[in-house]
Length: 346
Image 1 (cartoon, rainbow, N blue to C red):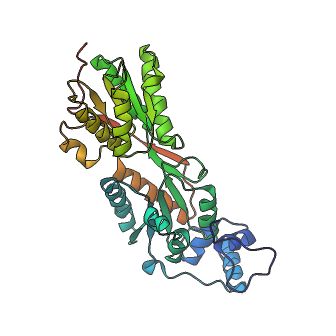
Image 2 (spheres, rainbow, N blue to C red):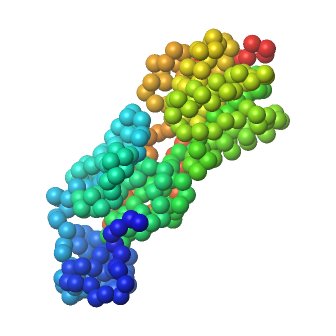
Image 3 (cartoon, one colour):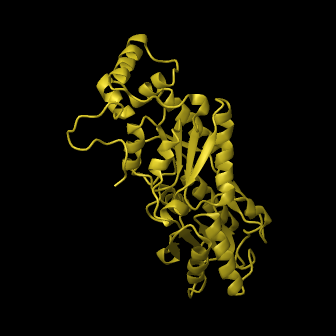
């Protein structure tokens, strides 16, 4: 059970013991409105401000540290590829700088491996907002942050976090474009290595892949599909399974670039050459793609703009505003390099 922001039973709160969420409920306003009053921000009616301030005084609420000394925006990662994390952080920092806010980060994976919590320590830093670049942020997490008046924005969530705002890329159309590229080259036996079924992005990429085949009138052989974590070793193992089939695929679409590099290794171990014997497409366009041999054809996600968009939404929520769209998808685009070519039989 995640702690923070919940009262126990019907006990009477001590002075200063109420959360921002509790103050908001008493005042009949949203937690971000209380946060605006606490930080002296504009955008709150005078009568509402007076009502909130009276409740804060009445309950002896301990005001947070001034905004200038707060930690600013916090970004939460888990086992994310370094280049992706750096791009997301770069986008967040560009927006945070316009408000003279700092940017911190939390590696959930390392904390959980050590048996340590991550929500409570993060809240102790009094963030203005939290951007969760982890797939398994839950509605319970959202409730804890909301109770403390801290807006949460998710990046490519699994779905449980909704209706929290989220930012991602057009995974469906990206996979559609990648598969069409292979079809246009003449491939018809196209394998697929997808990500974990619980990931919304993985499901969207699967749907885009199938839509491209369906539109082209190419039946999909389910024996050519494998699924697993977004890791190179799984791409290698699953790719080996596909490439040792009696009638193997002539091309493979992967759920991310790490899986694609795993397929590279599977092909090498089997004595296959890319793209002469096998075409491979990834997803993400991490920095290694252009330097691989051969350079990887992949779908580029605009990670810096994803981070910047999430930061703008988080700051707007902290100011008491509501985003016009709860889910934002930024355009993903196919980058054609050297790992794709027409099949030998074409």
